Length: 397
Image (cartoon, rainbow, N blue to C red; front, side, top):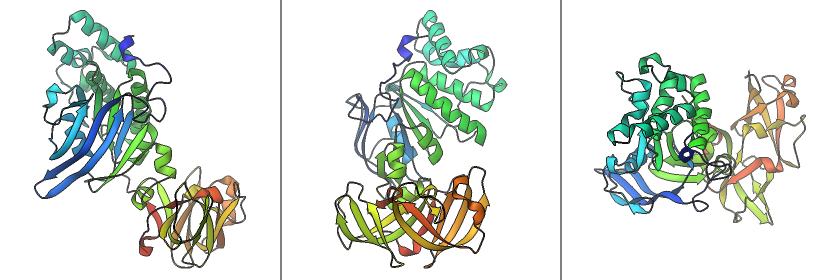
């Protein structure tokens, strides 16, 4: 296999690669994109490291695809700079940037064999045929389709076409591969399988992948880091673990997975513990998360559904809080029972109960205190509208 395409274990891309610990491949410096009076991207400012799987995640219209198109060269920034390997390419046309793009429709040539599709770019660049054969053979091995070299695209499944499109985009060794919702046309099971395949391929070739998606599961599964975007802004950049467990805004908390969000007021902050007052009059002790919280400030208490348990079930760790509720819904979902409850002030909460939580003891209408461990709650340093309190979740397809 072509050694140029391989990366040793432990180099960026295998863990939570962060710009600053590896060479920066792409840098966006205060990039703005306007279409007339409409601002599609507002001051994008971040680095993407060599060998990193970096995702831009957000709802439709958040600016993620426009940002990708500016990196590719299909759009020019209204303001700011885009640097590739330290060189300003803001006005460089797409064909002169050492990046390739994979789109949702794959754009394979239907009259060519798989081998010729993958070889197309190399032959256009007048690469010697022996080198073409070696590189194409290596890529077909990496995408696990060497036996399909003589087939036409219409003889392949959707997942196979996806992998051939990847091989064609990678064969000329770009500095970065740009992927614009490439899994959107696949059915659920194939999409989930391709998530793992994409990550495996990215690890093997060692090339920076920049992935655009509105699907949080895709981003969490594959990414080293994620930029969560909304209304043209980048709300937070972090590892999947940071984004999920330590959101910096109420939008991120609600968009990533399902979250129970409750408005609270800081009563005191002593050491690493913050005491907050809820609308029900209860007080809760919450980890500070390394931030300073001023008494009297309005913040948001976040508790993920897997952290809520009925009071009769054991709490994993030191008790952190408890809320009296009434069960409004119980839905069996295989590994968990989705239990929706309502607090005495009308906020809806949801818990994902496993067998150890003994959900069979509950029924609709039951009164139960929902509890959580001290480490199971997190303070989002931003207030939310009390009318928006309760269950929040991303609108997934």
